Length: 403
Ligand code: GLU
Image 1 (cartoon, rainbow, N blue to C red):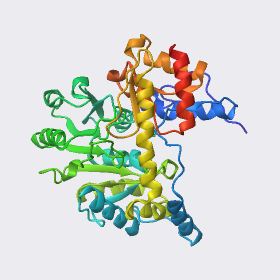
Image 2: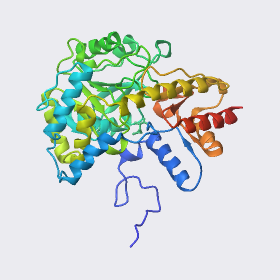
Image 3: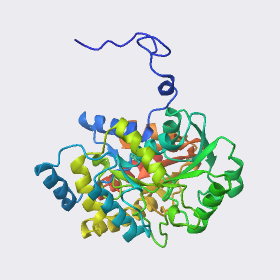
Image 4: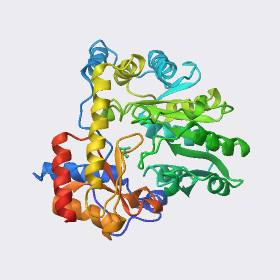
């Protein structure tokens, strides 16, 4: 038997209909373009892939070893929905050691499938249909669709280019209505690379307190900041108790994207609600992935990790300075994270047109800035933590394309 596709557009009711929320949602540009690059590679095309935020390294062996030992010794069953006590304790150790936070592993932490699942659980736990969530423009491609999936309304607030892609307080305040439930933001920021200082975090905190809002703080890139820029967790700032949901994960900084593992740190009543959602949605995060992740978070980062981060700084420096030297392009070193946010406005070409031309004619995959929101037009996002060979070849091809 083969599956039968309907002849007409699958909108509306009836056995062939697709839900309106999906029909109204764009696909994920980051994942779609990375998938396209993989498909082209399978077809024999030598694509240099700078699209999704995935480093070229594999997960360090000592972390794989821990997961593999767990699997071989029978750790192959579902765990508590909240995650294993060992994994949560490891996350609490990491927060104490690296982030100056005291989390109770029993009541304030939950294991998640990366930060995307952390966001899903958070939104289902705190947001009612019709509620509004304020988010950054440009911002991560999946935030707005995820809010919409659950009946919420995303309210993008432009970041200010003259503040190096941060919010101006008046603008943020002006976006708050009586339906606003939460502010969602990401630091180090995807896609612009901005790292919020404590003072800037305090501004977001003030607005949240004044209007009694939650803040969902996506800190997936927190272990990689460059130069003098340092990551500060919003939850450590004064008077933020009870309203911050911190999302962290290993996808980016331990090259563990395929493991789908992270955690959320939040007030106990929120964790309890997230746990209920997790029980119904997925039961729990993978058992042996939690065992590996417990080592990745629980132990002091080993040289396999710290050495990788050091090399990433060099690759980000190299790539952004090469991009900056391309005709019509300007690109600064990110303060944190590993994306080059390349301003292409002087080339006169739109971000989608240029991204498409780069992929089709030069076999270089990048993400058009427009995928990150209206304010992203005129930019390309380029992942800088690919192999040196790919970086050099990608730059060569981009030079050719922009000559
Ligand atoms: N979050 C990464 C990115 O921005 C990976 C792709 C994805 O999960 O969307 O590229």
